[in-house]
Image 1 (tube, rainbow, N blue to C red):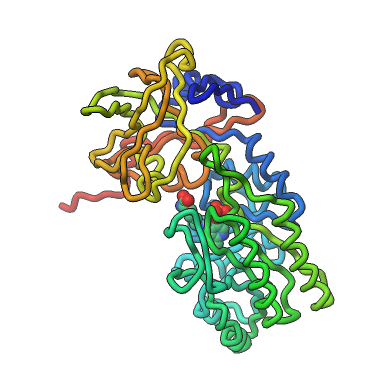
Image 2: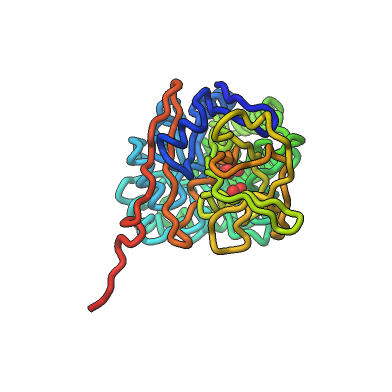
Length: 422
Ligand code: LLP
C-alpha cells in the first residue's frame, strides 16, 4: 500500500496518480484501496465472526471482496438484503451469512426475510411476534439496549432512553414470553451502543451483555459486540487497543461458555473500522475566490457526495493534488473548502453547529484536485441527488489496478420513474 503524501500535498493513491484517476474516471470520484480493507479484516481475526455493517459502504464489489475474505454481513433493510444476495451471500439462517438487523420490519423486509428463511436480529419486541406468526419455531437473536450509549456525535449514540434502537434491557423476560407463544428461540444477543466511540464506553457493554445473556439462559450460542470501533480522522486521534478489547469480550464469552456448558461464539460488527480509511473522494477545484479575509476553494463535490461534515461537523483530512507540478512546493495557506450546491452549509471544512473553519493547505489553483480522505465509510452511501446532482462513480484499487465498480449516474437516472400526467 503506497499513498504518496507530504503534509497536505498528495500525488497518488495506492501508487496511482490522483490526476490519472480523475482523468480516467472523471470527478467527483470515490476511490477505495482494497489493501486497506484487507489489512483491517486481518486485525480482527481473533473474533470468531466478523460481520461487516454494510451500511458503511455497500457497493456489491466491496461486499464480494469481503465475502471472499470470510467476512459475513448484516443488512438493515430489504435493499441491503438485496445487495448481500447480489454479492452471493447465502441467505440460509443456519449459515448466518446475512443477518437482518433492525428495529422494525417494513413489509418488504418481512416478506424477504420469510421468503429466504433468514436469521433476524430483533431490535423491538414486536418483531419477535411478527416473525413468529409467519415462521413459528424460528431462531432469533435480540438487540438489547443496555440503557447507556455513546458515539462520536449525539446523532450516532444508539443506546440509552433517548435512542430508538434495541430492546430495553429490563424487557428481556417479556420478550422470552412473546417468543414462547410462537415457539421462537433466542439463540443470541447483540449490543451496539454507538458509532465512533471509545474503549471505555465499549468495555461497559461486556458486563451488560453478561447479565442479559444469563437472564436468557442456555439457548444463547452467540454474542455480538456490535460495531462502533473508531478510526482516527485527526492526527491526535487513535484506534482502540484491539488486543485489550478482544480480551475483555473473550473473557465475557468464556464465562458464559462455562456457565452454559457449550461454546458461545463471539461476533463483531464493524462498518467504519473496515471501510473508512480505504476511501477517498476526489474532487476538482473549479473556483478559487476571496470573500473578505477568507479564501474559498470551490470543488465539484458537495454534501450530496459526502454528507458527514454538514450532518455531524465531521472532520475529514484534506489534501491537494496539483494539476501540474507538485503541491508540496506551494505556499501553505488557510482555505475554506466548499462544494457546488445552492446551500451555505455546503462546506467540507466546518465544525458541528455549522461553523465555517479553514484548513492549512498548499495554495489551491483551478484545475487541481482536492482529496477528501477517510471517506470510505458513510461516504457514498449517504450521497443524494439534491440539486439534481448525479451521484459519483466508484473505483476499487486492487493489485495496483483501478477498476470501475459503479458508473457515474447519468441525467436520465435523475428523472427515471418520474411521470408527467396527461
Ligand atoms: N451495527 C449496528 C447495529 C449499527 O447500527 C451500526 C451503525 C454498526 C454496526 C456499524 O457501526 P460502525 O462500526 O460503523 O461505527 N452515519 C454515521 C454513522 C452511523 C452509524 C449507524 N449504525 C457517520 O457517518 O458517522
